Length: 129
Image (tube, rainbow, N blue to C red; front, side, top):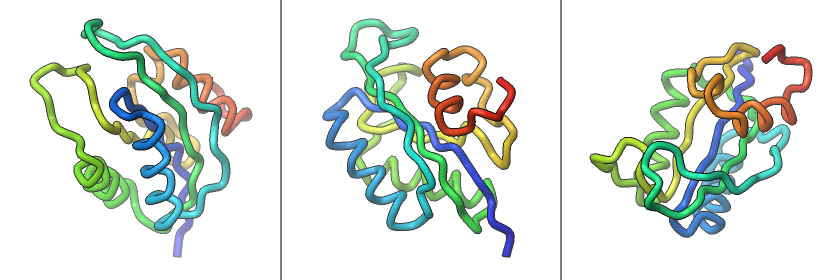
């Protein structure tokens, strides 16, 4: 079995601490968490009329392939009460994204969001961002 390494970005601005804790517990129950980044408060992007976000990331190991992991993360978002809003960057209970897959940046937002780069840097200092 191939073991893949992924950096999962976590973000929330609705009951953020509770939802991030639940997401980390669920991810840890399914995958091996190698390391967690610090979690920071960030300003909302795009839609400003909402609470600040808490964002961070986890470095995990998984035998799943990327599409399978992504699908599992989307199901976890729904389980934790994520509702797809018409507002693209609106409030959310939890946002889970694969940022890095086996040493490769796979999420374009990494290049636009300083906090994502900082989280990845904390988890994978050798990765050239």
